[in-house]
Image (cartoon, rainbow, N blue to C red):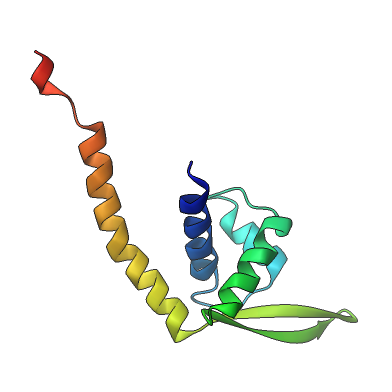
Length: 106
């Protein structure tokens, strides 16, 4: 898969993972895992990019004597998911065009 396409898809997956509730890195990896394999070393740069783009915010909470970062989606992050859903309709149309049965060779 094209690396830029995959990167964009992973970013939207991360936003979707925190859409309904704040979460932290390890939990995000677990939530996304049924859909796509992602490691924490891949996740954290994505989280930083999303934070820099103001698509999510971060807060630190003490948990078992350590600080745990919780990620919260912003209105801009929710809008990014909505835009992705619209873009996906076009991607599906392109996929259907590419994979259609070729009747012109009969």
